[in-house]
Image: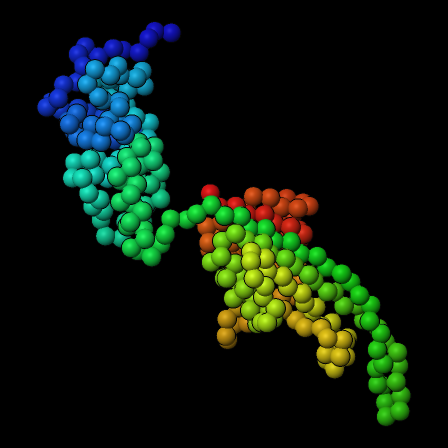
Length: 271
């Protein structure tokens, strides 16, 4: 294998330097690239520094960097201007933050953090979310009236569900409580835990008997759009919605990873 081509002459200060970033060409100067000496670009193009093999000029004298070419436009403008100047409605700050972290441009990272804070969207912090649910079937007996003086002993199976949500993100945990707030009012606990217990009323169980047993349903949604949570699948579906809205990703499913909504435990992480 032949060694990579060696530039006939190193780039000089004051002259143009052409970079090929992910297939997009940019022309600039060494003064711009080394504006922040502690950054990766500053170290790469510092005077007297040997050029790494992956930065050797390709055809046409271009220095190749295998990163996102579109985002590098804003990296280069920050090096030129010394300030962050993004177009209105720019929606790729997460990508730009990742690129700024790769190039180790700390002033740009600070500027992005200030921008996201001013927009009311703080940088997501690492967090853990765990939800588990268990069902306990219970056979209840009751007297059913069949006539003026005729009663029969009947029975019905009632499934009682117990769920526990653990989340280290207080904002997400608050959203969970709000999502299930109708049935959990007065039972919310402090700290990172949130527990629920509910039992849907079977069709064959009279409402009066259901209330006498001290059972209660679980509801989700806001005013005018309440939906009853009738079992573990509908509960886990609501948990999944809230988790994704807060930037979590599914990390593990127990016991069967192929059967998400019929599982007993979901684990989410956010890096």
